[in-house]
Image (tube, rainbow, N blue to C red):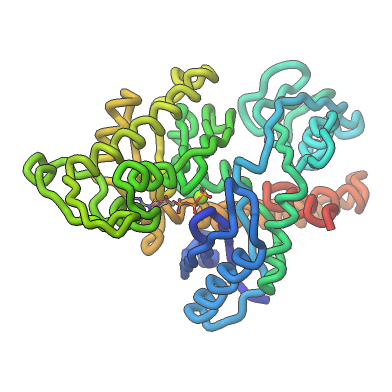
Length: 421
Ligand SMILES: Nc1ncnc2c1ncn2[C@@H]1O[C@H](COP(=O)(O)OP(=O)(O)OP(=O)(O)O)[C@@H](O)[C@H]1O
Ligand SMILES: [Mg+2]
C-alpha cells in the first residue's frame, strides 16, 4: 500500500493536487504539488467532465513523475458552494451500566443531530459538533470520559447537492483514481492556514477564486458560519475587457502582468494594447490600476457586508485571505485593512514548497487526513489497551469495534461515501 496521501482540488480555473506523508514524528510532510488548467467547472459545478478528467490526469501524471509511483487513491475538497449548512440538536441517553461518555456516544449523538428533513436531491454528509451539553450543562472540553446520563450536541449539519457531488467523484474515478474520502473546504482551509489561537479568538478565512468567494468563520475553535458567493477574479478580468475593449484572455494577461500599480510615477506610464477590433490603443497604467482597484474594493466590501449582515463582524479579530483571485496583487493587505479596519493576512500553508494561498485547500486536505489518521491511531492504541485491561469489563466485542470505527471527519465522510455507492 502506498504511504502517500494524495489530495485533489477541482477549481474553476485549475485542478490542483498534492501528495504528502506522515513522518516518524507524526507530522505531515508535503512532497509534491501539481496543477493543470481546467475550464470544465462553472460556479463549482462541472460543466464538462471530459475537461476536468483531462486536468486531473495531468496532475496525476505530474505527481507520479515526482513520486515515481502510481497514484490510485485520493481525497478531494468539497467546495462550500456545493454545501448547505443547518444548525440542529442531537440528544442521547448514556448507558446506565457504564454511566460514562464514550467515543461511540459521540458518534451516536452526532448521528441523532442528523435526524432532520432533507430536501430532494440533497444528502447529509456530515454533522460538525459546535457545543456539547452534559446533563444539561455546557461542556467546555471533550466530553469523553465524563460521567453523565444525558449527552446533547448543537451541531452544524452539512448537506450537499448529490448530482454535482456525484460529478466531482465520477471525474476523479474516470481519471483512474479512487476517491478515498472528502474534506469540506471550510475545514481544509482552517487546517492549512489557521492557528488554534486564531480559531479561538475569531477569524474569517475567505477564499477568493476565479468565480466564487467562499467565507468560513471560526470562533471558540469551531466553525460557525460558511457561505459562498458568485464573484471572483473573473470579474476583474471581465471589467478590464469591457472598459478597455480587449479580448478576455488579453485582459487576464494585463491583470496578471501589471496588476495594481501604486507608484505615482509608474501610474503615469502607458502601455500599448490590442483591442477586440485589432486597433492598437495606448492605456495608462493608472487607468488599468483604477479598473482593478474598483472591483477589488467592491469584492472586499461585499465580504464585509456579508459578515456584518450575519452578525459575525464583531466576533472576529482578523481575516485570512486565500485563493488566487485578489491575493496576488501588491499592497492587497493595505487595501483590505483600509476596508475591514482589522488585521489581514494572506493565508499560506505552513509547508516549504507549498507557500502559496492558491494551494491552501489542497494542502489543507492533507492536514485534515493526517490529523484524522493520527486520531484514529490514538483511538486504536487506546482501544487495544482498554481491550487488554477489559477482561473483567462488560463491553461487548461489537462495542469495541464500533469505537474503533470512530472519529475524524475524514473517516465519517468515508462512511458516507460507502453509503453513497
Ligand atoms: N498574479 C496574479 N495576479 C492577479 N490575479 C491572479 C494572479 N494569478 C492568478 N490570478 C487570478 O486568480 C484567479 C484564480 O484563483 P484560484 O486558483 O484560487 O481559483 P480556482 O480555485 O480555480 O477557482 P474557484 O475557487 O472559483 O473554483 C483567476 O481569476 C486568476 O486571474
Ligand atoms: Mg478555489
